[in-house]
Length: 247
Image (cartoon, rainbow, N blue to C red; front, side, top):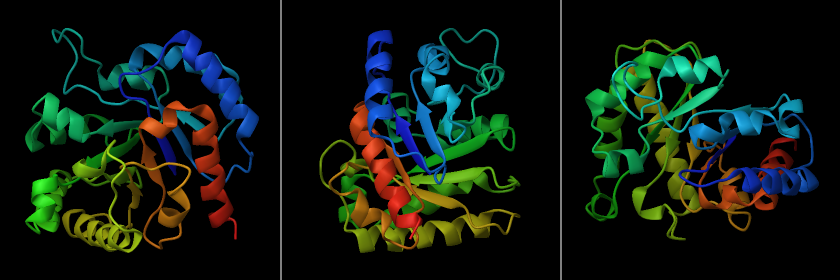
């Protein structure tokens, strides 16, 4: 699974250029689930492009709100489902940092979409927490939000160390693999579902370093920020992932 998180970027012109660049470089294999999470206002614009012809390409949301109604500026779960969004990112570190989202709110959001579409729950530690050897404790607390929720194969975890996002700094591939194994164990301990979830890595993933991550056994894909804004580079990352997984 390779997912693009465009964050607060994009325009109609950018979408057209991005689509052309992506399709020029993408090698179609139908191997990986490909996700694109644009700003919600552009979901329909992407659905109107040639990308809609590819069954492996799925459009999703960067976030949802805890309810509909008198919540100006919010996007509800009902709205993204109305557009047939195949996933929603929940609990991204930027939502936690800039919008002060806490575990109880994140859990409410998960409950809104659990088993209706894929939930991509983001977890990750800060630089200070990493230096203080608190990574696993932090991740366990963040994953607690899924406790008592039964998922029918609709949960994906994205491990995004906050200190790696957009910095060019990343943990070593073997360290990422270790953390992903830990996350899978914790998810199973909190959920009634015995299925092992997919765990994606996010944090300064690009076409130069992606292969090193994808070779690790417990890395099931990537949630990609900045590099996903370049259609060519995003296609190349998918091609790398598919090349490794087709062997």
